[in-house]
Length: 160
Image (cartoon, rainbow, N blue to C red; front, side):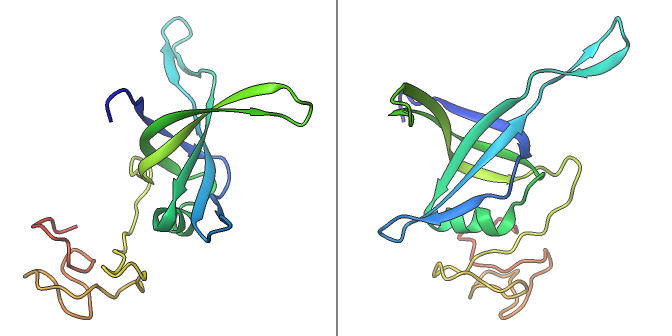
């Protein structure tokens, strides 16, 4: 990953993620994250919003389906990924450049909200909330939830 620009963005989704499929059936979800900086103006003794950054983002494969099924318009998210630049011609034939975030990790911000996480089955087929993937981990209860509210099969000692 040498030479790649990796960033983390905290902001709100401007719309529900749009899930599409390529001609080969590969899922991709596209969405926009709006991030607005806030600074404290000591003279006015109040918080002021700066100019919003609207950053287009995308996720691929099963990750795209997870994002589209989990995140909705207005949610505050934390996204980390790599900036990608692409050039194209618009309808009028003008050359354009777009900067987009290819997301590696994304999740809801828990600063002003709570979240419930459901682990996807190890076979990639998805899972039903409340059901866990088969596991031999000591904290997992086969066919149900463990004491942390999820399944097992994490491959390490992390109980979440």
